[in-house]
Image (cartoon, rainbow, N blue to C red; front, side):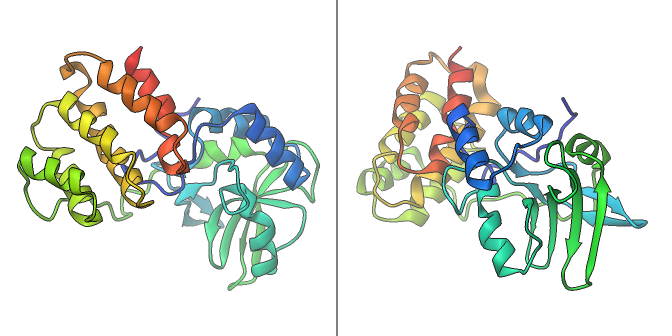
Length: 262
């Protein structure tokens, strides 16, 4: 595939749940296109997200490509947002947006051909539109790393004892303290089975903003501490909670959990 394409941030609003054949069929039908084979293959490895290779040269200038849009299940997710944005920003028809926001966009340009379209760039503010790659794979191959793009590491506001985290999880009424305590333990030393067990409880919290953040911090800990788990029982239980969760931001971790269970 490609070397280190994705940024792998703990909280990545552009990464969607695992791509299924059903999602692919519905998206292509909704947009009335045949998506490029290489794009689909890439989305099967990770369905959208922020990019580590985040820059492309256009007319001798480096332009930032912050993210790639994945294949969503709803009209406001990933590439399915195209019809709305085309109307909102007066963009050309017969395109599929793959990155951008505001006045600048990267898109699959189906005006040129109906299969394996070229990739074009548009800046509505500067009145620029230009073909930048003959197909999606060439577009990906042209991406490079711009190390000057600002990077930051999320840091918890305070330190927490295990008892404090447990009390906040049990009360379940303070989104900040719950998520911040999990952020703290995403890097602090703790028993991983214990942290996963607390995340399982959080999955039943009705607050829609808590579970996605808790999953992000918990999976960061799992990724960095895989060999320290005493068993996989807690991960199996977490997977069951995540599989049919009502938040797409939570469900996207299901496949990752299964990979750690194997």
